[in-house]
Image (tube, rainbow, N blue to C red; front, side, top):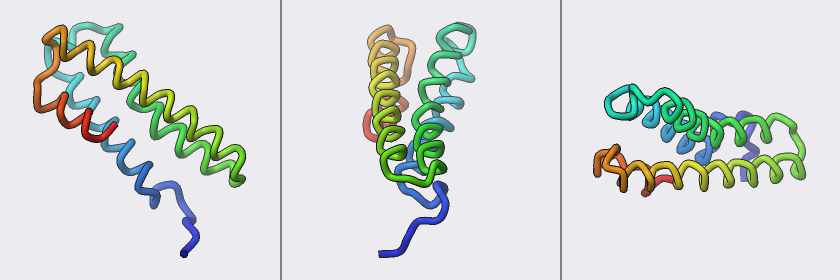
Amino acid sequence: MAKIERFEDMEIWQIAKQIAVEAYRVSDVEPIRSDFGLKDQFRRAAMSMSDNVAEGFEYNNNPDFVRFLIYAKGSSGEFRNKIIILKEALKMKEKDYSFFMRNV
């Protein structure tokens, strides 16, 4: 098995990054766009997943990497909680909700 040299080559980071990109897209339209607190929290939770994968990888040792993967998993739970609430509050389109739930 080949050694991964860069976090950008990791599938988990690529998926987490795409979730963050989609979160930015979704939060740039109403009704999330004008709810500045929600928009900020939503984006931070989405970004935190890929941030933690990247940061843990860069420490270049397994115990730290595993610890940051656990943080990323926690951020995933926070993000899922937000998208469930947004969907039930009718502030997120079904197609966006489905995308996030398939990937988080």
